[in-house]
Image 1 (spheres, rainbow, N blue to C red):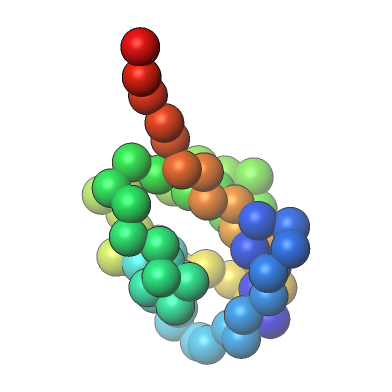
Image 2 (tube, rainbow, N blue to C red):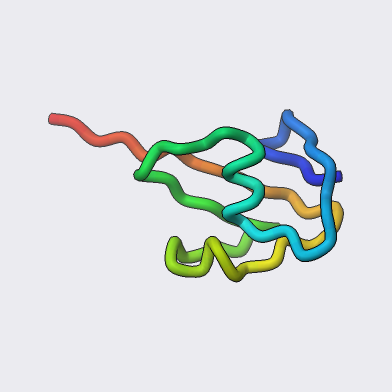
Length: 66
């Protein structure tokens, strides 16, 4: 199991990437920041960064305005 944003849990699969997590959670907003176990994952690494079993994943939706 993975913990997402300290509240949701999803089933972990071997080889699961950050992109897989985002797709499973239906996160499609373009301005997000992701950390896995406290480590920032760069957007260009979402397709290759492997999420370990029992990881704590935080997804921040960035907002801007004026």
